[in-house]
Amino acid sequence: MKYLLPLAILAVVAAAEKTPDRTPRMRDGHPDLSGNWSYATLTTLERPKELGNKTFLTDAEAADLEKKILAVQDRDRRDGEGPDGRGPDGRTDLDRAYGQAWWEYGSRLVGTRRTSLIVDPPDGRIPPLTADGERRALDKRGLWTANGEYEGGARGTSLDSYADRPMQERCLHQNADHVVIVNEMVHEHRIVPLDGRPQIGAPIRLWMGSSRGHWQGDTLVVESTNFRPMVFRSASGKLKLTEKFTRVNRDTLIYEFTVDDPLTWTKPWTAQFPMTRIEEPVFEYACHEGNYSLPNILAGARKVDP
Image (cartoon, rainbow, N blue to C red; front, side, top):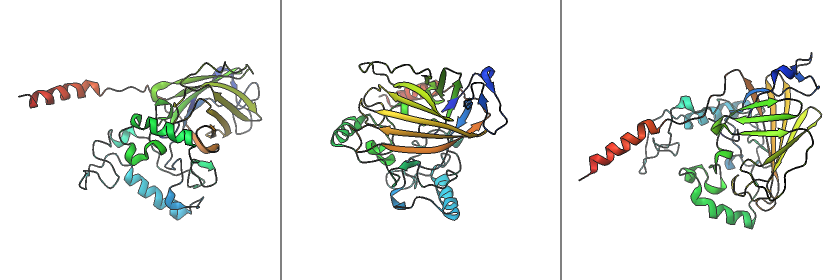
């Protein structure tokens, strides 16, 4: 599992043809984006407030920050200091949930040492909410995750739904007419037509939105609209998501997305980060806790029965 939106790209390998340059290409000349890609990174979506206007870290600063983040993100720690039973990481032992092996945060910041994944606005922060966006954020506050208090609540990095849950691996399938993007977490997929067909009608609203793709040189651009309101953070039905996929070499794909919703944020905002090709398969995302938790819950309840 992994933060931030999450992408895997599997292509129809039979249609792929490797060219002499470092970027694999399809027979139609477009870059071959197929494969399993990980975007695990310690770099946060927004720039930490304490870094102010600092856009990039030095090598020494990056190494020190990586060390601190890895200590905080260690899910194998069992401390629970303080009057409220939380450790220095702000979590209780229960909050840490699974052991460290199940959390794929990565171990490094992005290679540029940028202090946020957000590249626009220049301050590395999500723009302020509009008055309407503020209202919707407050309306939805009760639906945010229980640990939202220390992860930022409705205005921060807590999670709205499966659409923005952490999922660092994605699969991408590609042929001349379509690209299919498959997420590791909840194994959702998007089928993206590349044939220039028009967008679906405005009254039709989907959890994953409706996507249409086209090529700009060697960059695949995917534009998604027709989202159901409140699917992503507190976004309205006017949300437009523009994604760009650029394969720069055999093992690296630059992913960029722009969020544009004038009813929710005062201006659009853009994030960018590299994804790394991995050889490991993307496993089924499934839970098994019920096999153990339900008997334990019932056994505990019987213990307290009069």
